[in-house]
Length: 244
Length: 161
Image 1: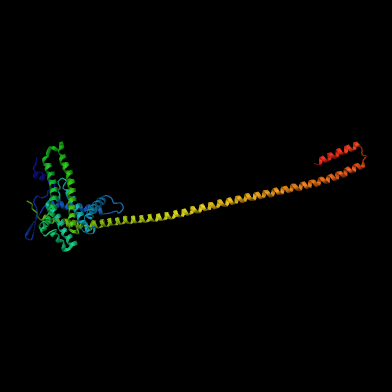
Image 2: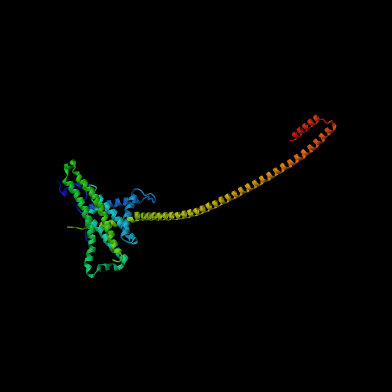
């Protein structure tokens, strides 16, 4: 039986630096997590390649291959957006939420490849994404309601002001930690199963537990990507909805 | 416990870069394609509906025309039947007339022939009488002669018939 640290050390096949990269700008020192950043860049490249492959040589009459997949995802998200808000207003955040869906899905799934890690298993990433949603909520609210958007803090009564503020602040926090918790827990459990059952057990089917957990992680990764997207859409629709 | 560091900023920047890149490269053509497709489908449906309507109009027109044609055909058949019957009656009528005419002519002919025969017979009887008178005058009249003469006479008369 190996400890978690030992397993992680052994799995570090690519030699990701353990200590953060330090960059000094002016008087402040900035720290970056190398593994997260590298995996994010890889994921970005994969997403970009997928999108380029899907949109190159598109056919209106007979879509095939990646175009079909992308169209399916796009139409699915578009359906959700159109159900939740006025399609005209929804068009301005449609690309954002489709990118959420694809990027988070790719991020979650890339961590299941042995020796690689999910960018979303780092709370910096998930908070970054959640902050994008948080900012966009205000952008959408101000764009479609003007300054009157802030009136919703006083509804239904003035006393609800603190509750409404907490509710708004809770949105990015819950988005962040739901995604991070699920994906990080998945990665940890993969490492723990490898350490716990390591050595000779793969001969006797000890890998079945890892296999089952990998399958479950694929499921969780898809579900979490969908949940993040769906909740963002719901928050945006709350911000732009009339008669609230 | 939680230590947020500058990775957060980097990730936000990464995500925004990805978003802008995809917007430039992929989303524009994709949404244009989807819009084109739905427009294409809508126009196809509209065209199909219009064509169906036109087809129905055409069908109604053809049906009306066919009904009219059928009515006309019936009229024509009726007229022809009537004309045929009339003609048949006419033909029968004229045939009857012809028959009557022929019969009359035949009767007249018979009467004329009969008349002629009677006249001829009279002539014959007259000439025979003259002949008989001549013979009576030329020969001596005996009972036997008289008898044979009368017999001849009767025979001749019999042959006349």
